[in-house]
Amino acid sequence: MNIVFYGRYSDSGQSEQSIEGQRKVCYDFAERNGYRIIAEYIDRAISGTGADNRPEFLRMIADSAKRQFQGILVYQLDRFARNRYDSATYKAKLKKNGVKVLSARENITDDASGVLMESVLEGMAEYFSAELSQKVKRGMALTAEKCEFTGSGVPLGYKIVDKKFAIDEDEAPIVKRIYEMYLAGNTMADIRHFLNDNGVKTSYGNAYNKDSIRRILTNRKYLGIYIYGDIEIPDGIPRIVSDEAFKDAQILLEKNKKAPARAKAVEENYLLTTKLFCGHCQCAMTGMSGKSGTGKIHQYYSCVSQRQHKGCKKKHVKKAYIEDLVVSNVLSALTDKYIDGIAQKISDLSAKESNTSTLKRLKKLLNENETATANLVKAIESGKAVDVLSAQIEKRQAERTDLEIELAKEKMVRPVLAFDEVKFFFEKFKNGDANDNSFRTALIDTLVNKIYVYDGDNARVEIYCNASEHKINCATSELSNSSPMAQLARRRRFELPTFWSVARRSIQLSYRRMVSQTSLRQNCPILPACR
Image (cartoon, rainbow, N blue to C red; front, top):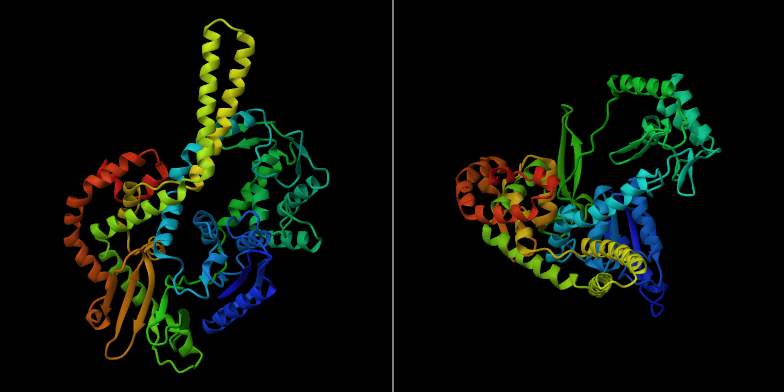
């Protein structure tokens, strides 16, 4: 697995030796675990409290979108972020890009309550952004009605002049050339090579790829249509491409889409990476695959120490077997008592960390604004200078809107997670589809802390769950005659009625609190039964 090293020291009292110490430990860790460090990002004499003032950190986050590495290795997790909300925000971005954060000094990905809280913050992001979204959309809609730039990105061929879209005389010919080449029978690969070989960059300054070419060929803004969300205004911006050329391009794109695709190698996703360890030598177990004499591909997890011939005798573990075993046992351990416990821990931690000085200041300013506005209204009612006071009221109302947006942003970044809301989030796991890869990934990432696998006379698997002292012991011999998922299916057939009788009331309560969140409601398999 390709990874990058991120190093940071906080103040001028530390020195380059601090970075060298972090680098040595991280490179030793990478070698032991079979990782390859392909780049380094280092911030010197910069605090980790906030991420916005760390240029190398931000460059690393941006580079993760290129998908050239799958992990970020730090000396320990406080080098990545000391603020839990920054950590949750940036880990969510990295997760979308297929990148995990690894610690050389800690076997777990974070302290247990923190891991769960970050998962909840990510999973409930829409819930806490609703207030901000409503207020921002109102302002953006007014801007869009004037066909003004909303800050959502400028397509190649355009520039912004006095808040309006205008033709970029240098870039517009490139857009026309792309359409001409595609309609002339050139493939996207041909166009990409032509542009990159001639040093032409995208509107973001990057090299062209297949996706960037497709976006240009399907962008209806080139027809002169101003587009913002559901708002479309014909002739709202200057046209670059004719109706005929755009229509022909769409026909050709659809035709090529239906053509037989080239065979692609499917990259196998090893769900337990960074969480699975050899019980004998404590080294990580990482994914590997091999082809049998019949041509069938087999996937395994193997001990890095054993693979590097360093004395460990741990046998390989079949990927499907160990992943099914972990998923089935974790689902079985999701009792009401366990869910209540972790929900309470996350709720307490959230309340402790969310009451910031910024939040207090914004609330105070809002109260002052309300008082000042009320006084102005009373003055108008008493017959004082109406025109002057009305202008001041409008000014106060505009200030209030700005303050409400800032307050909503602060609440979104540092939300208070109520016990019932967190409990509702975890209740979703109880009825999830254990065969769905996205569900399995979410379950393991959220609830599993680490897993140790043992061979020999006392062969077993030990699963440690987050935010709990609970350890699940699985004797592998007990499962030799039945697959883990088959056992799970049998257990859950009998447990389900008990679950519904105990949990129905709490689910209904949480549902009422979150009923406005359409997307979350659609993704939750237990909600339809509560309606």
